[in-house]
Image 1: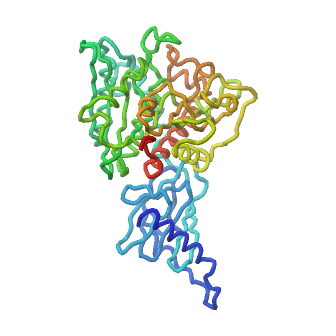
Image 2 (image 1 turned 30 degrees about the vertical axis):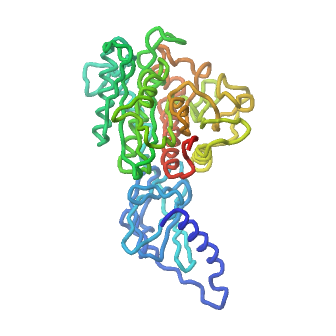
Image 3 (image 1 turned 90 degrees about the horizontal axis):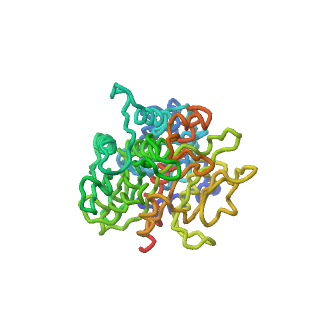
Length: 467
């Protein structure tokens, strides 16, 4: 059933439900939910939902449907159901349930074609979320640590572009292997436009996932290069933990979470190079013609960018103030009005689904932030809205008409270690008051970005602004 038909049927059911029994009929007799719905092949009363994990469900009978709240996601055949309602069929419907790590209760409404409904409350326990801060930290530690045992320490440091740099090539090969190991069609995209092959302009890792449609494309990415020695403002770095090994590792975790999902559009998951040299890597992908470059015959709908992750709310600075959390959608053509539909997704994910505090402020102001709305947002902890802010790879795709979201943590005077030798994982831990606090901060922004992508993929109104 299509989305419009689902919505109409749902509306009809709820309009009829209050009338049930109003015309001399007996009240509808409720059935045993176990005869219709199974969770992890158990009766709902015997099942248990682990927060942030996948769970299987089956639904029997054409006369039944189930619905959930926004923080309990339903998938059938790997497809997210944006209406949070699944209808039974002639054959058993098999699907998956995914909750957020922040869910407080799981209620599944069982709805009959006769207008009857009953709420099934499923017990909830702590789980290991499909993307989580602890695993992110473990991967970060492996990539940034240097030791004699390559099984314990990857030592994928010093990843700056230039003349040539074997450490960058080694890191790119490692990241490529990760995506290939998950089954993605993965390519190294090398573009040389100055005539000297020893000094690559860009070397990107591009992983592709085929969509259900053949007329559109969308993507997600972060840059894997780090600031070269002597680079401003801090003199260059060797770990680049915050900028941008953190975003790179988040892309590795998203790739694993997306393996069994089905998206509407062809999807690229990318690790860019040469961001620090002027977005050359993402521009090479978007504006060149090659078999695995951005296709020119498909509509580019949206792109989500991960750059400088982890130093943000709910982590706190040493003075007790929370670090700022930035998530900006665009393009923002007119600061007085909302321009793009992806802004609604951005807002819904943070405040309706993940239940972040919308109006949390500090006594003072942050050091830097958005372009068009900073006067009204300079003390706002969760700076989540439409804006023109650039300075990262999302600009490449925004310039081509894509709707974009850019995630960014603290920078400038709120956390000035980036682009410096102090940009290390140890320093990030020290600044937020411990490993657990850093993991919490990273887990929140990863869930925000992952949900944005899943929901945007199923939102028809998200189109290229030139469409």
